[in-house]
Picture 1: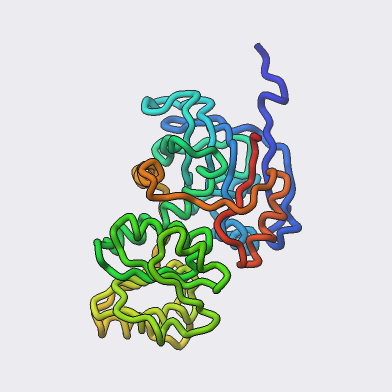
Picture 2 (picture 1 turned 60 degrees about the horizontal axis):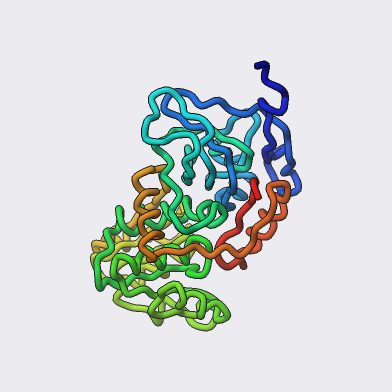
Length: 323
């Protein structure tokens, strides 16, 4: 049977040039074909993350295809498997964060990516909520579990605790048995406590660097002067996880940290199927839930970016591809 144009083309979101959200447009492009060890996923939903609009604005690391298609978070159904794939089959519901920091291409109807960068979608949640989890879940898991090795009873400070990443990090730390302190605006304190934080500090009313002490692990997703200020909250020998680089000019964070035997450094999330399975396990055990506050159709990706760029959202924004 001869393939029709409808069979070989798909809708996707691509910037006409790197810059503002106004440059995002819906295009029609060739549907990918899975290569060896890859799967073709029919996308049901795609999560929206800060890295999406930051790369849209700056052109990312130059690791883009032609056409460039944004997005890293995805939940969908396996349509086809490439040669050598045996652990997944067509019809399996999966979620993941493929290829980061190379082009993930999840703002599209289909994507092809390495099968081992996905896990089966957790039971009990829909594709919209599953699509909100991969990047923030892997970031929190790799930073707090694999890098900081958070232990029961340790004091963990999570900045921007009401945000898409922060509220997931709070729950990952709590799942490890930590005592969690989050920073957030006063109107978001109930939400942050609701996801498990033991204390919440209103960073607009008090200086957390003056009021928070004896922290074992500080999780900084904001950057700038937050790294130096977070250092002041840490005990000697603690861990500072920084997701924003470089440190604020003029702040000798690394030297100050070394003098106190504090581990510090820039952490970049990696695609990891095993990590995705761990996240799915937390969801299925009732230890992790993701808050989705806004769901928009794929065609409104530009509006999703504008909303995210305000920096005032609670939880996650998701693009729905299959309703």
